[in-house]
Every structure is written in structure tokens, then in C-alpha cells.
Length: 230
Ligand SMILES: [Mg+2]
Image 1: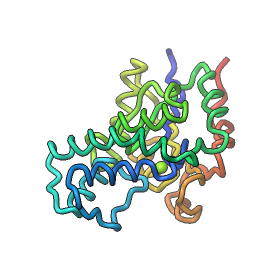
Image 2 (image 1 turned 180 degrees about the horizontal axis):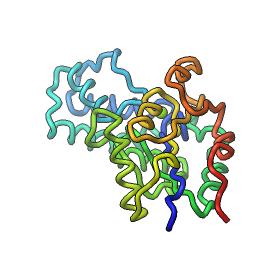
Image 3 (image 1 turned 135 degrees about the vertical axis):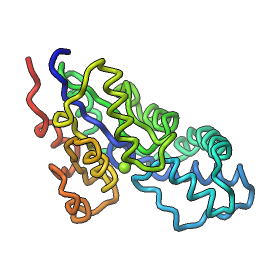
Image 4 (image 1 turned 60 degrees about the vertical axis):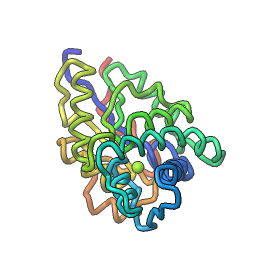
């Protein structure tokens, strides 16, 4: 591609899918496998954070040191539990209009879809594959290595740079997500932040971050993007 394409980065949970708590359940299952009888602490916040940050908090509240080897074992147990917890929740769902919007964006010649998620890579693709959406996302940034989600944003941009073999124009990069963390990720890389109200955050909470737009569902997304070049 000669001109930088439009890049649309998507968060996963609350933006593309609702796993009905399968991710949280798999984390708790991993914790109790790692440390039977561990008390996970109810205060750990899951929404919009990286899996690494969540893992650190869960391990600490259970009295376990979150050293790198222990976190790796925790992630391994999490990935083994996730297919089970997804299968146990038939109420899990793809959020409104997501399949047709992804299909439409994929067919635009100058648009690249990518992930920008706190999920670890394997967890992200396990969730997306469960709902038939994995094929839309050739690359992305993930929460394996980073506690700070803004670092994931930089990693996602770098992944797109490698995928395209060209420099993305941040002003043509859109970050779509359901939490303030997604919007701050967008700012961290100079991209356009777009909030969607299909997760748990309230509109007024998201509006404080001054997103470019607040969408009821992803059905309104495509009209925000630059028109495709013929
Ligand atoms: Mg989310």
C-alpha cells in the first residue's frame, strides 16, 4: 500500500463479545488450581485492564508472589480453563451488529483490522474463535507482557507496522472500546478514540475522556471512518 491505510483497533470484551463472565471464571479456576483454597479477593477489578495486571492482583490478594514464572503457570492454567468456561456459558454472545460490521470493514481495500486488548494473545484468540470472529484479526497488541495498557497500544501499533511493512498514520488509526482504558490507549498512540456502550461503562463516565464519538453499537462505526478509496 502506498498511502497509509485506515487501521481499526478493537478491544474484545464488551466491544466485540460478551463471554458472560467466562474470562473471570477461568482466571479464578486457574488461581484455585495454582493454590487450592486460595481466596481471590473480591476487590480485583477486571474491566479494561491487562490480563497481566489482573493476574498480579489476583495472585497478590491470594498471598502468592506474582513472579514471572508463577504468572506463566497461571496463564497456562487460565488458557486450559477458558474453553471449558466458555462452553459452560451458552448465554455468552457476539455483541449487536459485530459480524456484519467486521465483514464490511474487511472488504474495504484500504482498511486493516487489528486487536488492541488486555487479553493475553492465546486467551484473545480462544475467545474470538469460540464466537467465530478470530479470522478477522491478523495482528494486534495483547496483555501478555504489560501491566500498563498504554504499552499494549504501542505494541499494537508496532504489530500493524510489521504487518503492513509501512508506517501507519495515527490520525487514520481508530481505537474502539467500551472502557476509559481503551480511550486512554488511543490517546497514548495519537489515535482516534471511539467509545461503544455495549460494555458496562456508563456514557457519562466515557464522555469524560472526550472520545471522538460515543456509539450505541458498532453499527454506527463505519460512518465515522474515512470513505474507502476506490
Ligand atoms: Mg472491554
